[in-house]
Image (tube, rainbow, N blue to C red; front, side):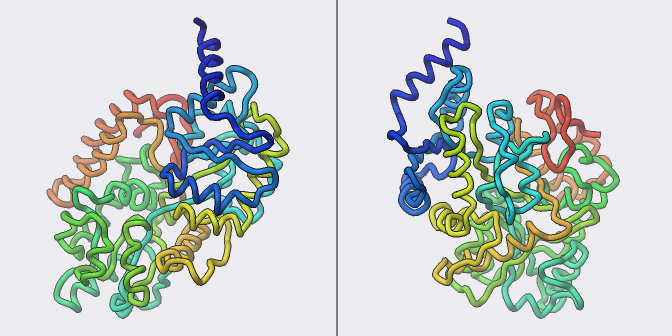
Length: 419
């Protein structure tokens, strides 16, 4: 049987298994998969859309199969697609141009990512999560003179960590550098792009050397027990650290348990900007959408301030538009929301996307950054020699995966180069 016929057959099976109700818009999504979140999407977020919405969540494989089947058949039932940036990157040809959708108020950097490197608007940002800095109020007394908490540099972060260590007799900065920690995201999405403007291509550049030298200096004033830390909320609550970096979800308990004792703020900036790693979910319309006007209306509905707040309650993903947060939101949301907005809308903001296109090699890709940290910072090996060695492993992984570049690196034809 020809591939087109196979896809058409798959489409028939999918439609028979989960047909949308008559008149409802089918929202086919990789997000909000837990049943509690799916129900919250249906009952809290989408119930106000005229005509109704049939929200169905699926893993990436079935999500992709149904989309491909509908496109191959030349007709479809999906009105709107929900997914992460990486979900859309491989199906750009299946997505309609949404350049006519009003995105006023949506973060401009995220809107640009939704073009997927082309001229057309392939998806519209929908919701986001990311990583932040957090500090106890005790730590604020040691902030460098003249430093702005919402516009710190890495040099100021190092000075802050040093001042606390010298004043208290021990290091008070912490990183999630343990086996369960997300230290690789700090290197990939924050430190290196802030110094190089790149996650991959400039991996072994002189600017990357400067980044790792800065990391070595920061580690001097970092609690050495960080190599055991997983979720930094625990160390903040015990007072073992006063200043930390982590994913918003892994800081939440500190704010929720003692909301008056901690502050959240953006990650620091380096010479190339204030790099941060957004987890961006978007909404798109397949080229086979049965009613494009209805699809566009639903996409616009998802951007409304009240819908964005309802989505935050349902999924714990934050708005992509500037909205005021209600007073009854959890303390962690009230603390993190303004910090995320400040970071993502900063004049020097530099989004560094989650790695994509790596498939089963994603773990090996992450390990390159972990090994680089362990060799340079923990092992004291020469920075240049380590970067040259690790760059070879990075090239191998990218070549094997055939993964083209993603932001902040420039688009590439073929595997992303490591210069």
